[in-house]
Amino acid sequence: MRMIRFDHIIFLFHTWMAMVVIASVAVSKSSFPASSYLLSPSFRY
Image (cartoon, rainbow, N blue to C red; front, side, top):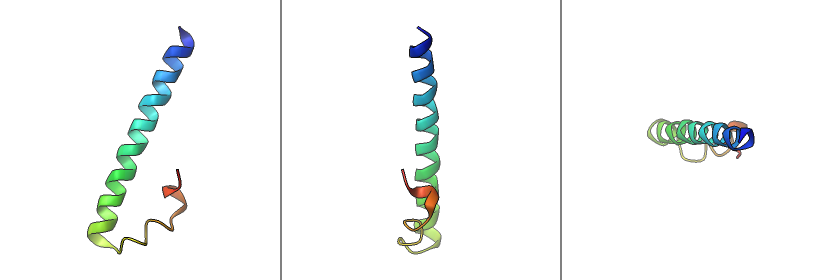
């Protein structure tokens, strides 16, 4: 059961990271060219 809880925490963490990436992409598209966030190392998944 501990493994299931651990996987659930990882799932929530990846979901939060995905939301942050989507927000960053939205800001990048509205402020900078679309090719700028593709070169950032934080965007690599």
